[in-house]
Figure 1 (cartoon, rainbow, N blue to C red):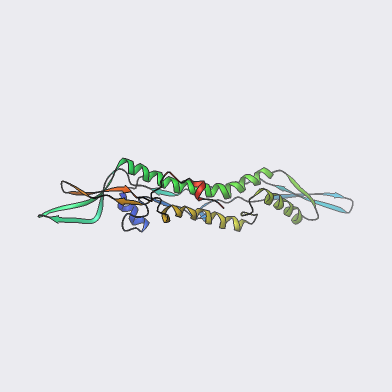
Figure 2 (figure 1 turned 90 degrees about the vertical axis):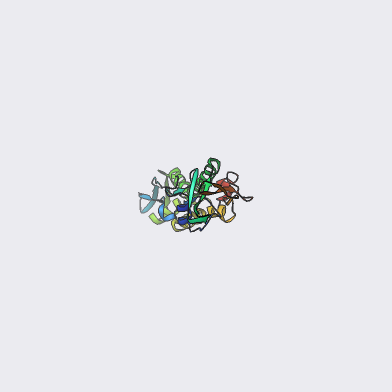
Length: 229
């Protein structure tokens, strides 16, 4: 969404004193904000003489994506807080000038962070949810105990999931957190970097046009190039 307090508010919330690695801000939440899937089984058994065979039946599950705050500067003049200047007895105020093209580009850049987070979810919790549900209703056994039957269900799930995920829910959390952090590469690599062109004066305003840099690559690096196991 467009930042209600403009570019200055974005920079303040991001901890940047001035334009640098990004002109927008997307606050990607951790795995704790997502709803994980669960491998849940029910059990039944079949008795044949002295022998008892145990079975585990996989139940359907769900997971939940998170909603992340995301801001970009709209087109127009954005006041630079504390930046006024006395020239010839007149007070001039400094502004960042955001063109429609740059505003749209910054919006696209923040959408890239959201796309990265969506891919992190798809590769983890959503993938796990889908594979558990593909096993839902199946009976695993016969086994000597309910625990042994559960292990057969876990093995079936493990065979369907990438080895990086496994069947340990604690590892699912770790992998999701790691994948969510990969979006930072866009900023550390300066793919979202902005600079300022030479200023111009209009009335009592000194306008600093925001521009791209040689490293800006918004729209050129997809989420599947950034977020992977």
